[in-house]
Image (cartoon, rainbow, N blue to C red; front, side):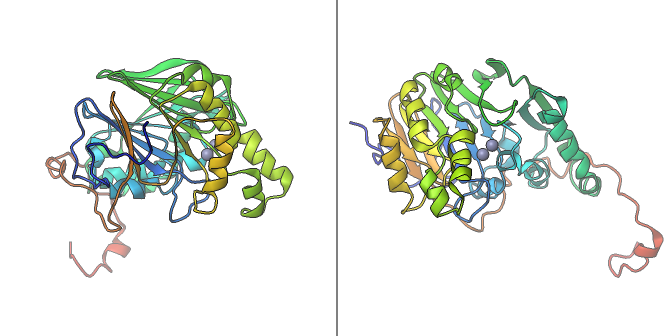
Length: 357
Ligand SMILES: [Zn+2]
Ligand SMILES: [Zn+2]
């Protein structure tokens, strides 16, 4: 029997930079597993998927998640592409960081970012990205003389939210989008397949047939699982009506998520999008067990999942609070083209003590 705590050939904990990913292996790291408001132990939704072919994808980039990414000491330049499941801030709030933070941190290529359309253009990802860029115009124009100009560029790929279709296919990697059911038109779930391995990430969804149809037999199913209605009432202070609306109509409660997951029958069910504490986990686990008897992991930030054809191992990463962005791919940073320096008016410049122009 496979247990959650079996380490196989892996060290007890994952240490950034200390383990080479096997050529046939997939590694998934939780960079944000909490709810829409930030707390120190759990950032907003974000999952890093690294593949043995060198590709690295980020699924969602909610608030706070990029602080966790920095702690993994992976060069920003090494991220192949970012994907958003929907436009709630707890899934895309760190857009400014994946764009400007990664640029200042060493990205030497345009940002490649994918996100879904909606029933109206103004609810789609292209509209969101365009206006994010526009709102940070002072920021980017004040940096393009000091930082490589190419890092300011964004290649925004908006895809149809309403279809089950392949939205990315390169280097043996296939990423499929399918609709999620979450309040309004637009949200999607994502499936990544590579080298005979597969994972599905739900984004936010209430229990749905789309999931049952598209996540059959995957290796890892990361499915949103909200705190129980009782926990939402007691710990978050919601009245019963609000708690039920949030916990069961907008999201999946633990028993509901477990029902859907049992129909999909993955090798590992990863439950996320709830406040995971010593005093919430037992009730979450019990509710999941009402409908699902398979292997389950209750996600925390910095949970690491190694996936091969033979086994799936879950561990935690030990990271530094003081990690700097990895600079190993910075070789061409100094040589890359800059734009000219913006002008400051004379009345400000003449007050500058150092340096004198
Ligand atoms: Zn949402
Ligand atoms: Zn969410």
